[in-house]
Length: 454
Image (cartoon, rainbow, N blue to C red):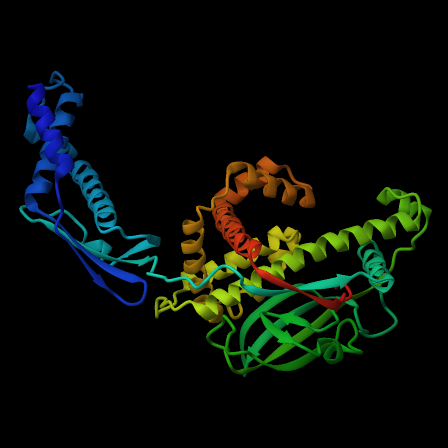
């Protein structure tokens, strides 16, 4: 009996599904899988046999429940379990047997047709993005330029000014209209002709060039100048072709502003109380701390600039075809990568959220570049044997948590839930691979003038 069971188990493991693979475009494969009728029937029989041994039905001893009664009572559940099991098993075999380096989730041709029918086999198909064949260029001696940035007293002065603004107070304005850099509360309606296509009530904006509803308004401060509380003003703007809203894309719309409130920012005074609250004894200590922060930020920006030059070298010197139909999912991948990059640069969470609309604009235009770079860096990371361990991930999470004033374990849990954690792992792995290229790069130093911090 034991020998017979071993033979059955071996046959089950050795079962080979009929599988066909064909190209469905650049870096995309179409996979057709057949599950023969005999395979389905054998699996159903196996499941019902297990169920009969375990099922508890009033009036029958375990192992003695009639087959017909089991089929009537549990048939739908058993067939669904078998369907899922066979599709999962055959999918894994299709991927492993054909050495498909799958990236992303499969797209099934007709999920509703993937049902078990009496006395029939099951045939299904799906498309997957796969790692394309890539021949990477020479990675030793890549020529890059490293900017040398000196921080001046003027840069520190501007940082002090920014700090005074951050710690300043908003006070009501009643005796005048809108001026530059006022803080406003407005109702905004976006109109295409006479149709309202978008609106936001009690929007908080600043009177300076900015973005309203995903639309850049380069002269917003001038357009709203002089407007008083209770007054309305229309601003006509051209919507870019890259705007996520298809209805208004590439057209002229009217932004109707109804001003409700004006406040101005009074800068904080750098006095003894201000310094004590921040933990400094005098202004020089504060200036030294700001300079140190700027130096650390510049160091990160310089490394990012070096990496970007390597990215450009790889893109310019690697021939690779990416999927011709760039989906919303791939555009979302670009947005997520940008958001994670901003997070790792230390940008506050609320600022990242405020920039989400801006991140969406042009995402599809960059999807092809990002996807190509993703494939190349995955190949290089694998060739170098680069990986990111738990300690490195936790270290980066702890750094971000400290910047945000959060508990690292809570932040990690949230990142795991929304997918940010896996994105961070991929980007850290890519950065490590690029940094290995930089170890053997030819680096020339370039003097540049430090820009004023924004």
